Image (tube, rainbow, N blue to C red):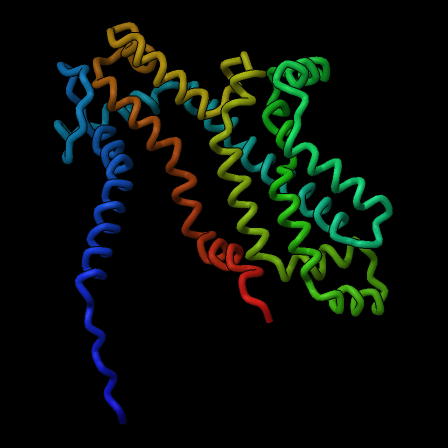
Length: 293
């Protein structure tokens, strides 16, 4: 047996590793700093300054958030919008992508041109707002779901993916008497799980972080999503660094930034917990189409 020679690392590679290592630390530090500040409590200090360890380890920030009833209401709204919105996103996007990928569709080029047109031009903010209000969707969760039902960019990618699948799969199903619905649900969708999981993750993250539609159309505090709740905390605490701001949640004296950072951590935690379970599908999904058979 021939022994493999050990590869020597050049000085350039060492510098490259150091450079990207430092870059990774600089990228991760803001997240680490947010976590550290959320566990800190310095009542006497209202000036924010980054540090490496909790100044005084305390969970007051998290307690203040959890005591607020509107936090749970906003969390429930966000969970509902994310689950329902992502489900509808995937159903409508997959069905539309499959239909547009069929070359025998009458008027296919016209439909594709109309869809691509929406990527370049839109009706504008005011006409969109008037349409939502005329449909009486304002102050409802549907105003956060329906306007972003389908992403044109994702739809085009899905359409191209379905078009790239071997025609023999559909032909074999047709011979067995399968219709369009069976071909889509029993053939195309099962073999596209990594692809579907990738876009489901994209849609879910967008739904979870969505705030613009709620900011425009939602006035009822009881159905505002989590991102608007977080925005209200950040804005209120930045403009009122006194007892008035501190009583917004619990009435106790707390370090202002600890409450803000605790809200940020709680807001992004569910997505961070969800990602590891979808990571294997995500890696496969983004690699689809990169290797030709």
